[in-house]
Image (cartoon, rainbow, N blue to C red; front, side):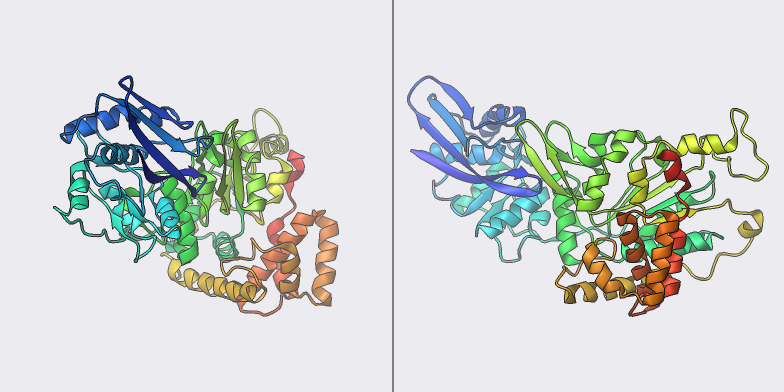
Length: 512
């Protein structure tokens, strides 16, 4: 007799069905596990054996075979412990063989039989609900699984014994409730920043259209402070975006307590981060920072200090909105549509552009050029806004805080995002489309330039030597500025402001 228990294997954020098949037969006393399992899965034999012993059961002195089908799909992770243990228990008659019909099971076992949390419960619950299954998972993961559907049966026990008692009707477990992460407190506010009005304007435009932003300025000018306040003016996640973000964080094991939040992700890795840390990878092709920042912000401080290879690996995800991680026997595709915000100093010491400053090693212009050469031209070209953030004077610092803060800017950003959502929905795109993510053909129709605007961008393209990508990014930026003004069409003044944010590309020319 073969007992079957349904579980899942993860490919990116997609949960593929896996059939755990358990057979007990006469022969040598051995516990064999097959089905292209990795080390964590292979070690489940000892965890299952110890957990069953702690629960008052012993493995029979027979040949025990566990097959994870399909056999050619790689199996990774410790969440196979619970389906294997339940399959063994059903095979020896400890629970009814049909008790697990219609359930997808995942969970890790401790040696004493308690269940410990595992990653990927939310995508597993979504996949189970699609197949018409219920879900059995550890207690701590129950609030996460409950988000998949209010009609799906979710069983979240603390231990193996508690689950068996529920199956036998001795103890009834209540369905877990969806959990919402409590606000961690007020976000940093724009009113904390004195001066830098032009930089605040650029930050608001970047938030309104989801544009990439590069800030260049001396140390202490407030670049990191500005970036840290970007989340305070971004609109909350829409339901579809929330599900995508939560599934990525679930696979990465970063949903503490199964609690979801509608705040957009804000990731700020250190400049020593490797390429695998940024784009994802490693032995098991885990999601990287760009996927964890999906539908949110990736902030790279001290941009030239990052490894050049790691920075250039961002170029393709910035265009496609996803990243494919390929290994010898495994390939995973993760969403990665993020807003890139970066900050850098003009040179190594940071003061090359200060009035009267003279570098002791070489001329200031050469110092600036060498530092900017660490960034490739194609990467620089993907920044819609490139602004100079000058040092703040003492006259600005002694002034009282500005009257307008993040709340007022957030209302304007939300209104601009709503205009974009309605426009692109009428054009047949998803409501979550922003100006920055709109296709080139669509943005040309959305901009609706008049004769004066067409002449301006044609002349400016020749003078600034804009690439085709740069041309369309200027249109997208101008469309966002017009949305902030509530204008139906992009006017000449909107184009002029958008072109001003492209700058003369001093760093890009030096890098090239």
